[in-house]
Image (cartoon, rainbow, N blue to C red; front, side, top):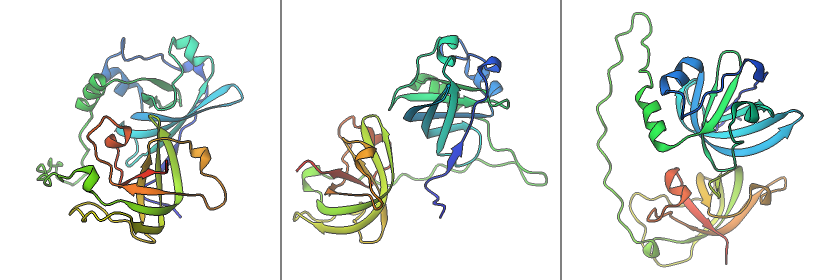
Length: 250
């Protein structure tokens, strides 16, 4: 069954002989747009080997160019690519710029915030189809009022989650799964606007520590205390949509 939250887009690289060695230091953002047919900012979620190739799994944070709703990219890069282009092999959790051109040649380089802003500024507007009016930029939506709460006063639940998917980035685990057991463990009042774990419903979760390989078996699950992530610290789950934070360190 295809799930809307997980669109997998596999991209294969053929040969380094035709690859261009672009970099964020020497190449302008427009060079990347001109060279690529797929261009994304992403976090590295996996680095493995297959024969003479390094297989780099990416979780897309922002797509500048390419298919709509792309969320996952897998690039196969010849192992001599890094030395030939004088680029360091990416590490788990690293934010990178991933690109693929029409010849299936790939580039993967580190990406900082300033360069990402320049790429975003060059992102082309949607192209109107024949006979349709030019697209009009939608009015900026009104921002919902910020949820004000203290973490110690938010509800805490004891729960078991049946895990559908697991990704590791920036030292944390990001899970998607179904609640199979949940019970509130403290007396805190519900906070309007925050989700409540309900049996049989699926949510997104984060675990500050652990490995995806720890969640195994035919029916993988994890049990712990669920709380709402309070982004008052520089934590990786603050940058991604997370309904609940899982703490199993009891």
